[in-house]
Structure formats: C-alpha cells, structure tokens
Length: 319
Ligand code: ADP
Image (cartoon, rainbow, N blue to C red; front, side):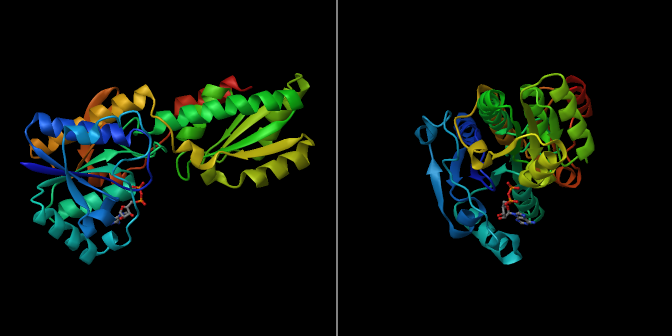
C-alpha cells in the first residue's frame, strides 16, 4: 500500500487532531503517501482531498475539534454516493482509508470495505459509546470539562442551599454521567442503561437534608429525559429549591487532555500499521491498556455497556 487517506466524520471530539497527526506521521515514517479528506464522507464524494506532509499536522496536537473538519452526509448513505466516493479514492490513487469517528462513521467504513475498499476505524466520540474499546478519543477531555463545570456549580449550590440537576451528553450511553458522578461525588446519577427510580433519588435527597447537607448534585444523561421535568418533579416532592444546568456543546470542545492525546496517538498510528499489514474492516481500540482490533461488523452489532461495579460503587458512596 503506497497511498492512504484519512478523514474525520460525525461529531467532533477533542483528540481527533492528535489522531490525524499520528496517522500522517506514521505514514511518512513508513514512506507511504498520506492524503487528507476534508468534511468527512461529504468531502470524499466531492473530491475535497489534499496531500499532507509532516508540516500539515504541526501545532495541532493540543487543539480541539478537527483540522479536517467534519460533516454529516446523507448522500453517502446511498449506494450512488458511496460509488462516487470510491471513484474519488481511485482518482487520487488512494488504496486504504482511515475513518476517525463514531458508530455512524463506522457503518460507512463497513460499507466501503464490503465494496472492496479497505478501511480501518478509529473510535473518536466523547460519549464512550462504542464496544470493543475501553475508551474512545475525546471521552477523557469531555469528562474533565464536566467536572470543572460541576465544581463551579457546587460552590453556588452550597452557598444557596440548592439542588442542582446537571444534564450531560449521552443519548444512549451513561459513561460521561457515571464517571462524572463518581468523580464529583454526585448524590444521584441518572443514565439510560439504568431505569433509576425517582422515589429512590428523592429518598436519598431527603436523607441528605436530614443530615444537614446544604446542597445536592444530580447528574442526568440527556438520553434519560428532560432535566427540567426531573427538576419539577423533585421540587414538587421535596420542596427543595432546584435548578437545572444543561452543559450542552461546551462538553465537545477544548484542548484534549494528556490521556486523550496519548490514546489518539496510539490508535491513529496503529490504524496505519493494520492497513499496511493488509487488514481491513477493523476498528482499533484499547482494552486493559493494550492495543486491540476488532471486526467492525462485531463492533456495530455489540452494544457498549457500562461498568456495573462502578455503578454500584457510585451508589455505595452517595448514601
Ligand atoms: P458518528 O460517526 O459520530 O456516529 P453519524 O451517525 O452522524 O456520526 O455518522 C456520520 C456519517 O457517517 C453520516 O453523516 C453518514 O455520512 C455516514 N453514515 C452513517 N450511517 C451510515 C450508513 N448506514 N451507511 C453509510 N454511511 C453512513
């Protein structure tokens, strides 16, 4: 393989730039030409493709977002759209593609591989919602952003004797809420994987008030429901003063943490190695701090699950 392409797709995540840098530098290390594709699969269809060199990825390791930009492409979900993409890859003489993104992006990569074009997936999403890897690129940074925000909210919560419901990202996966809850000592964590009983949340709040607690923090993953609805119900049941903070897109941006930069560098470089070994249709990941790779078909059929021990611990510690 003499020429590889790289793109980022789906939602951006801090550390994607570090992954792009690793892909580019590893290719150059192996004397393989590397082409960047702007705007994800949409840019691929449009031929928004350029040759990268060592300097192309200088001074980006510390930046959030993605220097290759990202886009959603409905056209790529069609057979014709993907055919156009393959024509562009052939036109540029690209023989293998590295896709940095989430499960939607991997579906695209899976379909290209099925059509005979070798792809490798690199998990980049803040939600940590992909099976076959303990961590995805961007999760650690988003988690630290959440913790910083909650630490600040806690100051106000204590000063004013308030109960805060903080809504974090996670439509299907509760990892951000669970980790943030444990790291922040939240009273309750509401995640899509567990249908937590509101009565239990309220009982825990009451116990806290009886012990003289001046504040409570409840972390809710967006997939569970509206933080405002929960706030109304808690207020009605307890008469506590409740407030809602929806952290929103602040969780996506920012300079990646050391953990994300290191993870992204390892995964990006490993994706190149796999393509050069002749592998295709695989996703690179990290499990028990070892680099692994799995069939993308398996990744897409298995559901990521939360760490049950951690969930149990969060309950035990927030009595
Ligand atoms: P993420 O990768 O973060 O999960 P999306 O689900 O939005 O983000 O997917 C990103 C892009 O991947 C989509 O805009 C589309 O171009 C491509 N994609 C998603 N699902 C498919 C599919 N079933 N077949 C082909 N391409 C897909």
